[in-house]
Length: 306
Image (cartoon, rainbow, N blue to C red; front, top):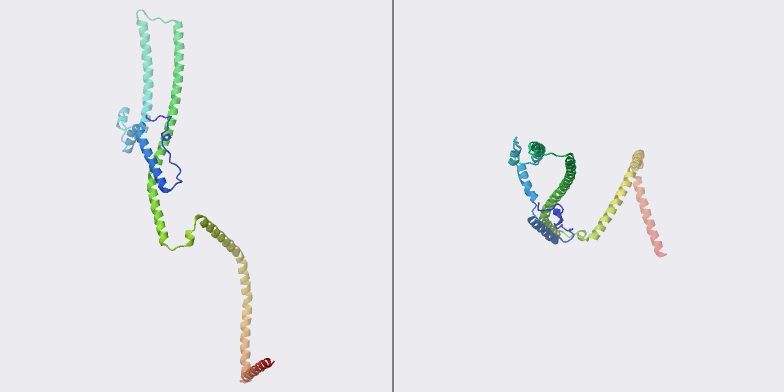
């Protein structure tokens, strides 16, 4: 691979800064970062991506029936599952082949030692030395296997990390490519809002700065809370007031009936009085008015003279 495991893909890629500047500068920075990412990807191509292309391209097509021949199936269309199965199959074959090779070579050497002229005679001391050498070689081989297994685990871990970082960079690159278009849409919306505000009726509250707007909102919220508290207090008093109104209505019923009876009795008494006097009451009322008018005139004259 062209990219070393010790050097993650995202290490040399410029990361986008926090967007605290104006939208125009932000769009410029986004374009610069996107161009830098494109140049970096063009200069440092990851060769493992080429290796997975046959697998990914085949996975996109319809799966075909797996052939009984392992090698043919791998050539026709490898998939991650088939590659894992083939790897286990070949590992088993190589283990059997190694055992057969060791067995065959051992038999061949033993036969040559017997039928040779002169025959090869090995002493006990040489066997002990060979056994000791074999044990040392086996121990060294075991250590090498452990080192290789540890190296494989480390490579797998780094490969997973690189894969996750690569996918994250791909996702962030796609998002970064969408930023200029989003900024363009936001600028269009801001221009539309400014034009609509300029043509609309001017409202003093809509032109306040942010600090005064927050103060106004806080004041209106406090007023709303006060009204809410008053409403809750009135709602708590409502049942008692309703009971009191019902009690007053119950007391008002007999009084209203009594008032109606009194009015009816008064009208009846007035009618009887008028019927008894036969019009004399009207004459007396007129004479009383004349006497009161004369009295008021005399009082005015006396007040004027004094």
